[in-house]
Amino acid sequence: MLRSDVLAILRCPEDRSELTVASEAVVNQVNAAILEGWLVNRAGKPVQRVIDGGLIRADGRWLYPIIDQIPILLRDDAIALDQLSK
Image (cartoon, rainbow, N blue to C red):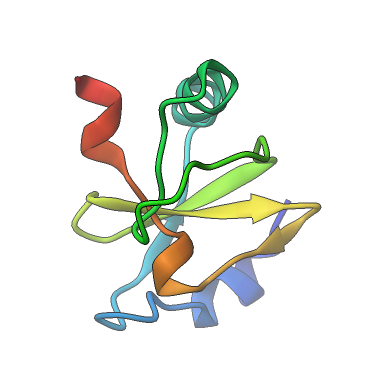
């Protein structure tokens, strides 16, 4: 997926914290929620495209999607991970 040297320089666009690669289990949960149609992004819009992977902010609250092998590091496109526990 992402090379370690690239991952080392990527940061959360909001708080500049480090990002880590989401586990396969988290990606599968996110994709299941997307397919079920209830997952929304930070802007409140439904997430419509399944993701290839994700980058999780250091505090574990937000996931930035990776689509077509490109990290989408836009604040409004972040997905709140607490939605998955509801």
